[in-house]
Amino acid sequence: MRGALHTPGPLLAAQGLVKRFGANTVLAGVDFTLQPGEAVGIVGPNGAGKTTLLAALSGSLPVAEGRIHFQGQEVTRLDAAQRCRRGMARSHQVPRPFSGMTVFENVLTAALHGGGFSGQEASDRAADALALCGMLPVANRPAESLGLLDRKRLELTRALATAPRLLLLDEIGGGLTDGEAQALVHTIQTLRGRGITLVWIEHIVHVLVQVVERLVCMDAGQIIADGRPDAVLSNATVVSAYLGGHTS
Ligand SMILES: Nc1ncnc2c1ncn2[C@@H]1O[C@H](COP(=O)(O)OP(=O)(O)OP(=O)(O)O)[C@@H](O)[C@H]1O
Image 1 (tube, protein in one colour):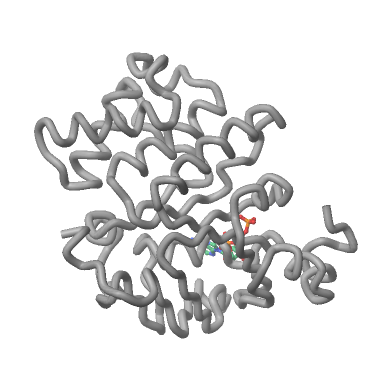
Image 2: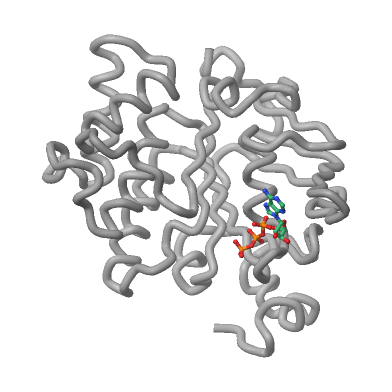
C-alpha cells in the first residue's frame, strides 16, 4: 500500500489548515508542502502552533478547515493510525513508551499495530529499526529503565519500525547533552540517507541546521518564513518573533 500510492509531485500538501481550541485559533490557515526526500525544520516561539501543526498533519488532531494530501491522495479525514499505515509516522515531544514492555516489544508493537506488518516481517522491521537507531544493546531492557537519550531514541525507533516515508519529529533533542544531541543527529542523518522525508520541530537550532536544508518559522498559528536556514534565521521578522536578536 505504501509503495503503490506513490505518485509524482509533492509528498505532502496541506492547504488552509485551521485549528481552534475554543476561542483560541492555533492554526490560522497554514499552507505547507513537502517534496519527497526533503528535511525541513520547524522553529518558532512557545505556543506558535508547531506541535499542533504536526498533530494535524499526522492525524492525531482533526482540523476545522483545510485539506491534506499525502502521496497524491486526500487524507484529511483519516485518523493517525490510518495515516501511519500509509507511511506517515510521528514521534512525541514527551516519550511515550509502553511501560511493562521491553524495548524490543515496544518496537515490535509499533511494527505490528502502527505499521500493519505481521509475523516475520514485523520482527524484521523491528530489528532493522533497532539496529539503525543503535538500540540493539538495550533491546531486552524494560523501556521504563532507559535514560533520556535512549527514551528519545526509542521514540524514533518505534516511528521507524512502521516503515515511514515521512517522519514527523517533535523536539527529540530537548534535554540532551551536546554529545547526546550529536549522536541523535548522526542517527537522523542515517535515516535521511535511506530517503525518508523529515519534518523536525526543534528549539536547539544549531543541532537542527546540521540536518535540515529548509527551515520554516511559525508564529501565532502562521508560517512567517520558509526557506534556506541561513535566510530564515537572518530574516528580520524571525529575529524579532523568535530569536530575540540572537541568531546562534
Ligand atoms: N489540547 C489543547 N487544548 C487547548 N489548547 C491547546 C491544546 N494544545 C495546544 N493548545 C494551545 O495551542 C497553542 C499552540 O500550542 P502548540 O503546542 O502547538 O505550540 P508549540 O509551537 O508547539 O509550542 P512549544 O514550542 O511550547 O511546544 C498554545 O496556546 C497552546 O496552549
